[in-house]
Image 1 (cartoon, rainbow, N blue to C red):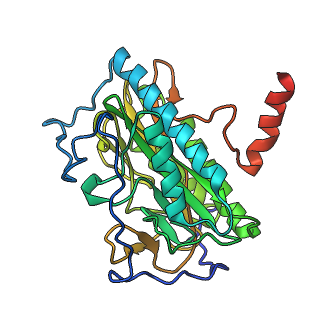
Image 2 (cartoon, rainbow, N blue to C red; image 1 turned 180 degrees about the vertical axis):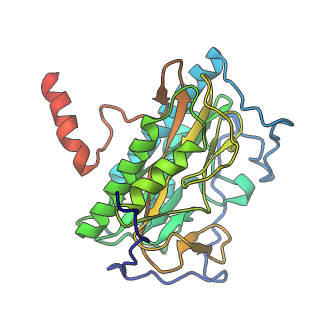
Length: 326
């Protein structure tokens, strides 16, 4: 087989948005969370108190822990669905943050991004060339043809649940559709290999091979991660070929897979806000994410879609078939 060539460099059809300077960036007060809702360790001062294990041993969750993580994963999915349903031309990313914040606390949960290492909002909203960690604000309005990643994490009864989804804003061009579907498909291919005994380092090779053969690039700057009582912990889950010793999958492990794929180069930099990461060449980026559990014989998505969840265009035939069966 002919080895894949370098990723194609596509000039995006979407006009880049004006980069907000530190002076222009909105500094709205942090949203309040009711006092009765349990908070993660960093809620007040922004500093996570959980420390990684002294030895690189991945935590095996107990049966009780897993049930709690199913609850937090279900809430994260419900909240994400609410945000995705609200996407339309003209809505601001601040309004999406309002929805996520309101729906999270309505379920007795804390929006995990809020004040995590100082992050100022309750959700990440990443538009077009933003690779990840876009900060919602009242001045950023979604436009027809945009693509958007909404990344929701909640903290409920001591555990985090983390997931993200792509949304099309109105009608988008074919290149955007292809980017989003290839991102989804490489993510699914990586999920297929996960089971007890598989090395975490194998995930990245599956993703990189899939996307480069189709002319896309995968981020080397941002990774998936272990999750549970801590928002981010071991293992590190790389989305490119690597020989990192991150361990072997075992039943009870919980982690995320969240590839960030770009039309051109995924090499990027940070905005002055210290969070928003964008592609250097302005090409669009896409991402999908679930929180996963390794089971005795495979893998379970703890943030899996519900029967009522919005679906991607290529998922609609399957959803319609399931409805017909009912």
